[in-house]
Image 1 (cartoon, rainbow, N blue to C red):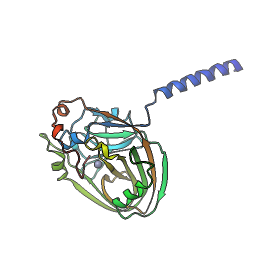
Image 2: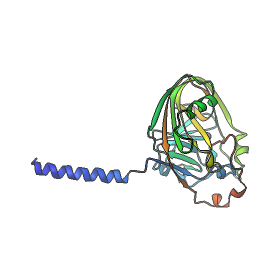
Image 3: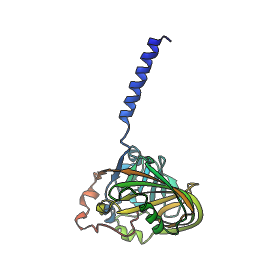
Image 4: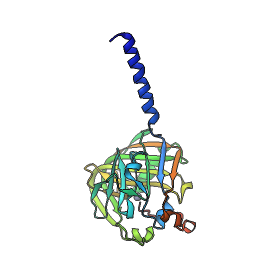
Length: 258
Ligand SMILES: [Zn+2]
């Protein structure tokens, strides 16, 4: 190949690369569909498919239409943990009423030692945050001597509120698992829109056990933080959402099930 041709080819490649970079989604955005309050009052069906959700992130959590269990996204895989404790890979055609995702980038990381509870882990994480006023996606890979997770059963219309659905939750306890905690820390001012503070889901290394994290002990773990300053809140285009009594929504709930 002549040097002129090589040069032309290089320019073409650069144009193609910049074109594809241009088409990349914004990785620094926390993308959320619907609100915590809408879920609280029983808006359990949404119009967003997992195929669509995957265009906005490869990491996150939420639930599946009809409040059918807990959802966790890790490395581009979307998992559903149903109330019977089974982990399923979610079909791209399935839909979500509430989810929060981002493209995970490791902005900060740290190794942590033994923690005796989720409260202790949360306090340890607080020390790693440069500020409490922004959003964080948080990934924790480690060895867990103890884990307590839950999932919620699929609901039937007319849907009850989230407090009633959570009253039927299944609770799972395990000893000595390796796995990954996936979640977010949102600032206190988002109450009603999302969970204020930490919200975690867990999946084990074999991708066969998991759920919404209620408690845990840590032997040792690697923590990675992805700080984001942009929240993109997309409200569902649905009659359920439009008619939901959000004026009367409770604002927060101590143990949200999503
Ligand atoms: Zn949850």
